[in-house]
Image (cartoon, rainbow, N blue to C red; front, side):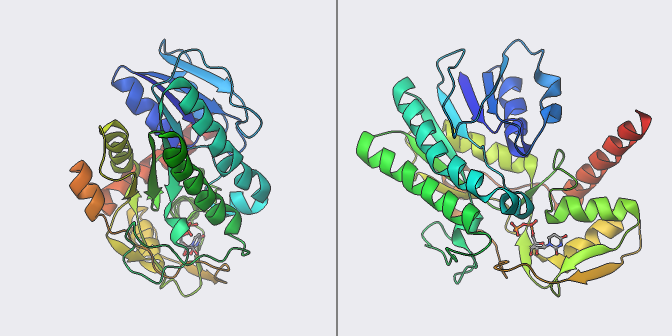
Length: 318
Ligand code: UDP
């Protein structure tokens, strides 16, 4: 199978590329390196079934070396710090960028899967969040470029299904962590790990009672691939993530413990529109995919901390 991954040099995209190549598929990554560099895919460049195209799909969908069977549209800034810095690019890649992916999928007769997000639920009034929930989003707030960009992307996918019968699917990805996150991308897990390894205080926003549920990257990748492979699924939208809810303060405690440091917390103001609670209802994913987020938080955090440690060691050796 030929798989195209937009944003394939990023955190999730590069793990997807690894997984498909491991199974003997051919992978083409399209990325403009706006929030990544080549480090996540450096080990793939010599692989005989791997192609890299540096291009911005907001400008055009590039020519491909092979006809794709599956397009995974994962190009987008995804951390609050990133999308606040480039809000217009964030809107463009999820709006016109998604339209270009759908158009290409239609022209090639390929299936397309869009990386949507739990952010489309906003600060949810329904808990846990089921796929049928429409969300509670501030359309003009600081997160709106991402939240509304992804909502528009979902609408594009749904319209292409209806208007053209395109096999367009989407996964709503809840907080995911693991190796290859950027230490400075502002998200809670890499930030706390970097601070703990530096012996610095952990910056807890607000009082730290807001909750998230954290999914280890390998589990998420498995869920995405199962959904992408399913013939004629009964649903075209599915939540993926973990459903063990923890407070941000608890995340800080666990990371400090796993890094063997005493917990020191520095409270900072809660960013605007920061959701108070978030946890997916995973009934649909379990039923449709026979899938389960299996990695306990303790183990996933340890793998991630080990990766950050080894990356630091290799940087200091340079
Ligand atoms: N957070 C925090 N300190 C940080 C970074 C994040 O307390 O240095 C909090 C943030 O306010 C949010 C949670 O951790 O409540 C998850 O934030 P993240 O940016 O990882 O993801 P998202 O807000 O998109 O769920």
